[in-house]
Image 1 (cartoon, one colour):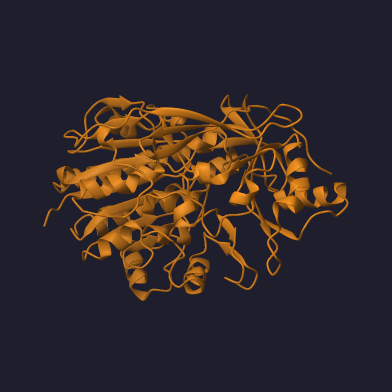
Image 2 (cartoon, helix red, strand yellow):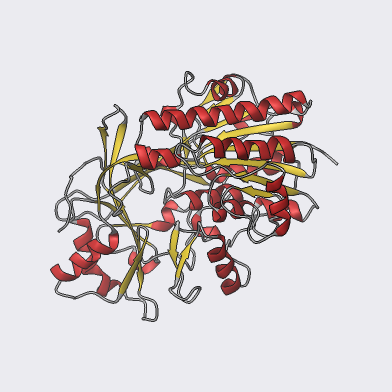
Length: 490
């Protein structure tokens, strides 16, 4: 059996422009000795579990079906809400959908068919950890849950008491790294090991971009990378592994906050109740559970209202018949041409700017949240949210290369499958990152750019989004309508 192995290290929310060699020297050395992807993209929406689902399946949300951190799926739960951080909610969605909580096959499923597995060590939510290996949870060490599996208590017992969740989560990050070094590395059946750290994301949300606490969290991530790589070297395993160091999305400073639900209530008042029954979850608008889905005519007043708001940037239609409404973009254009039965009626992305925060870091957004303590967030079509970090290092990769060929979260699984020598006929939306390979099988297609634009409005300020394509794979470069208005509704 070919025992090539892969290690994926995730630093949740690490923006590529914040990767400072003075703060993260180990990661900088990996980049210097490997391949750094200078134009790496998250999928939209730039939520954590959406992007982890994409990393684990090589598919956009339009194929894998995890379309937001919090989704509305009628009748899947008592209140119709699926919180994807909660593994029990994902289990409920599995039961409701006949085993299709994740509609595309994941990395763990692929390996399980071969008698191998993904081993996950994480400080992220239980739901996020489970998405890597939905059916086989026998090798997950998560500081937040044991998934009700007695064997996972035994794994955690080997590592000692779980540290408290004090921000920055330095000790929890070290704990997860020890799960890799002390438990997972030695077992060759762990063909892929995932070390996923919720820093700097957790500190970014609480303290903001550029804050001392966030810098401390980034140092902790680098320390965990060093601990892991050093353990591989001591045990003579380094040459058996190809390593990806990555993030799932970027971040933006919060300049104003209000939920989509509250904006919808304002719309109902201003439109004199001339709206069909609707519900919201995350950045999405759905038909209210138990009601007939509204037609385009009945939604037109709401769309006109949304696109006229100073806080609203891009409205996308999640149903083909809604795509002709003035002011909207087709959501499927952002999802490589796919839509899922879980697509919302409309998605709403707020305005963004390059405005600099108190720590001198650019990138701000009018966030769709009520959390006034939230200093930084993600989810929008801002290029600051959509650009993420990716570094590849190991025997199969070139050395000392920076590539500006577009890449994205959709490309991780196709590339891992190639590295492991696994033949797969799965319909990936991503591609193999051949430009990073030391012995590539072919060359990537020439990148092509496209700007999609909403049907023009009376004010001539229609939403515009730049896409980048390599072959049949689409990457979202971001909204082109930079503007910031710090307007709150009353």
